[in-house]
Image 1 (cartoon, rainbow, N blue to C red):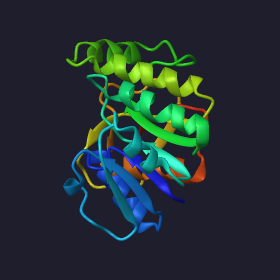
Image 2 (image 1 turned 90 degrees about the horizontal axis):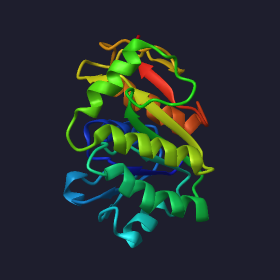
Image 3 (image 1 turned 120 degrees about the horizontal axis):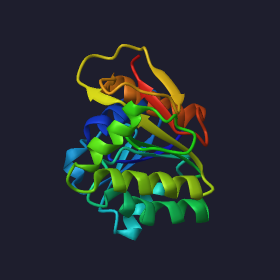
Image 4 (image 1 turned 120 degrees about the vertical axis):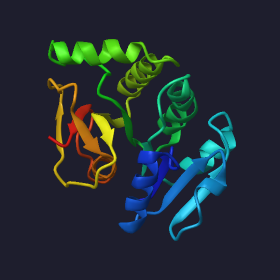
Length: 206
């Protein structure tokens, strides 16, 4: 599967990139600074920003799936939505997997105190992080694309455990966490195997 990757130089995106290449999936990545993504077999890097239509289009060209590991906040995911979703709707690819935090609430989530507290805490974070992520969730759900929105627990630097608990809409604990490499593995698996299509699983190590 050929993957178009956005956010490939970040903490999670770099792990997704490594796993994808190791599994033999060619990756086309967009980066503001191509030097942050050293040359590797199977990797093609396009230097540019989300407002560079030519670079975005080239990153998507001939891809089978899109993975977005960009961090929310300061309108970053809004820029991604405006630049990428219309091109996907117009000419493909149809499959997209994106990552946000578990504080994003969606219809069908339980009315749990822990979930309400998560959202309340994240609304206090500078850069309108939660508002950006919530708008992104809405854009994906309305796009008509084959989407999965991964809502992750707190990221942990521990080694991968291989124990990944994922379920749409459940009362995640405030102290829940997931190893970054486990999260990367789950994101890639969703893209490749079409797991949780049209759903927004909440993911932790359990």
